[in-house]
Length: 161
Image (cartoon, rainbow, N blue to C red; front, side, top):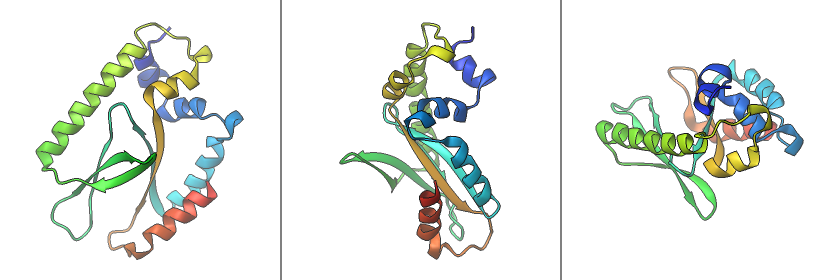
């Protein structure tokens, strides 16, 4: 029997775990979502990630035409997940990211200190422990992209999902 960390590293990919946590019996069909994402990845680079309340989440974005990359962090405000630019140097950003990863590892190791059967895990408990919020990133693939329609592109993808 693999530990939780080994399951993710060697036996299963992250989206499989997400598929089980937010399974289609509860109204979430990730296989359908993957078909839609595949359709859009021909034109855009699309990433699906997760923000985990118990340790935070930072995202570094490369903005065309700017000398330095812009750094963002997710915050929970009034029950909504909001994405805001943060004023951090490169070093501060990576120090914070390492700190966040360490906090997540501690929570993860504590949860999986007892060996759990993957097939019989309580995925509602798992989701509650880690407080997952799925996140979709839409990034234009071209080098000289018109970013004026970014919101329209995101809305189009979200509506199909």
